Image (cartoon, rainbow, N blue to C red; front, top):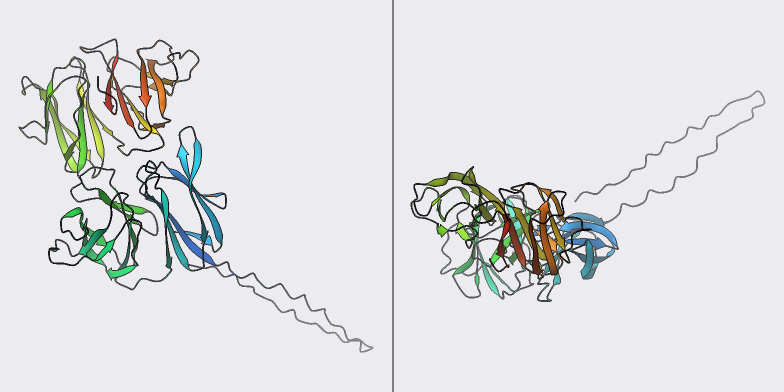
Length: 461
């Protein structure tokens, strides 16, 4: 931590004397003594971490002034330098319609030369949202060492054992490095910098429910590791959020892979088989127009997707199209286009985290025959005076996850700058915490009337 000290440079005035014929003496008046410089302000460090899996983005206020905005799940503010004082801290949830609501508040007496981390943990839906406050004295890290502190922030998970070992060490006869219960944190531990493996087991157990694989802990670096709920891919209930002095890193289970589902959105194409990475065995067999697979967990990295007619696999409509999948992420791969023109893959990144305060609505324009469209989300089927929720949307463009207040809506799709409904009116009910996806497509066989493919929490058509 650096401090800025202000110095005052004083110049002494030289007195001048002069001799006259009558020996009169004269002298200057000394300048006034300047006021002493104010003492430098004492400083503290403050950090905020969003670790509540079903909470929306938040703003953080300190004494009614914005300290942070748009903090999302699994994000850390980094350490912020503030004057040592008492602060009224509030966490305001961002709700649909640009509204906010205070969901957490506390008073923080920030003392000099201290680091404070406030972690929002628990569940909004479970009414268990709370702040875990960690205070550490600021200090240097020994050369060649890393400093690690662990917080258990995974709601619904009790006492766990944590093993921090050399890579691939056998933990069968090893005592855990530490044991920690929900909302508890360890002291700061200094360990030699280098490569380690972190495994988490149930208390007294040896089967890892989380395995980091090899990770590197850098010298003279501070890590606050929070065990958070896994809302990404893979079977582990836990991921590790490493809060650093600046920003954060997410350390997922080494077997998390990526989740991929396939959507048949080519209206004039027959049932197809889908092959990954040149395999002769179909990953998806006999997928018909309008059908959606469940999520398939595949290794992260570079892959190819081949789509062939189910009746005759020699008829290939998508030939080894490359796709790149990131660890922990979820994707929808839509086969779109037309047999009479071109069939191509369209890969969309999904947002599987559920937010307790809103519904998530995803709309994708996958209709080959339709031009640019306007999409309306209204209380009734009358759109005559309504403005579109999305305007001038071209083919192969998706809305992303729109957070919408729970309620009953009508979806209508029109050609751009027209009130003539081409899709709908479609009555939908959206629940808080739900995820709803709609793909606008051609009619079976191609052309109009246009239709939709409903996914996720919708009942598929």
